[in-house]
Length: 79
Image 1 (cartoon, rainbow, N blue to C red):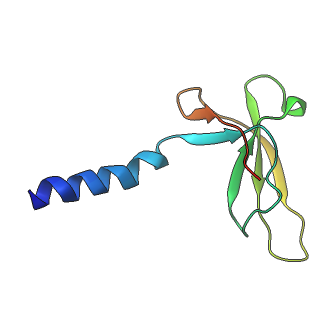
Image 2 (cartoon, helix red, strand yellow):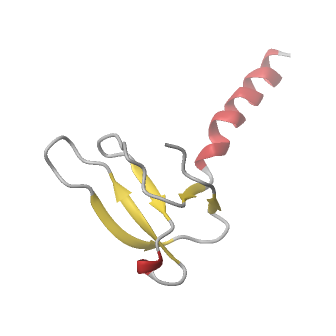
């Protein structure tokens, strides 16, 4: 029974790593070096904006990247 419970906990921890969440708007607060994927029409078809948080005093890094449709799920951003 312990092995089953441990396997269930382990699989629950691993599952979120499989897919990247694509937000509809850029988050106001982003921890340093944290990455968020944002749906942005400026990036073009099939691409999303990859926003990387920065330490205080520096600007966030932004780049258009391609994500496979199997990897991304579209959700609304929460403030």
